[in-house]
Length: 182
Image 1 (cartoon, rainbow, N blue to C red):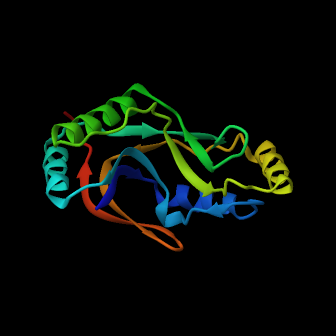
Image 2: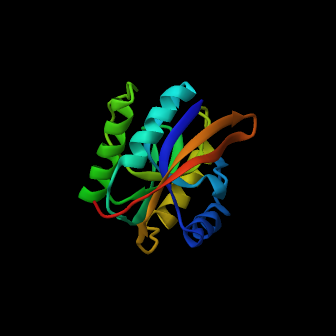
Image 3: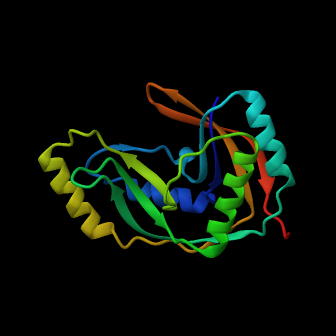
């Protein structure tokens, strides 16, 4: 089962990000119901292994984490592949991610080593993005790049199933874990 562990955004933040997408000049906007901050992408895993992850996450104790969205950027050097809202990195958020990844590893998952760039994906682009679309996107980013939202406190994280369909990924919550004082 394709899955990941992440943090959902408050509805007001989802609404604001959806309004921001309204005049996006190129790309495929991510549906607002899929906005989230990924802590660990688990990939395709057998249900038995996900049950072990679930038990580890249930036992984990981490305090709620402050999340701040500030700025827009893209992944992809010359040609963007993803537009995202940047999430400010903090020690608390990095600790939460590390603990989540440790639980997944203890359950037997071999997670890829990657630098943590906390973000919320807003749109995806084809690799063959046309030059005029690229220029319009750059202009859009120059107007909206300093976009910010008020910080919020994440009080839970979720284990999601991610099903790929022709129209994009569908994310379903498998389990929700409160973030409570250790």
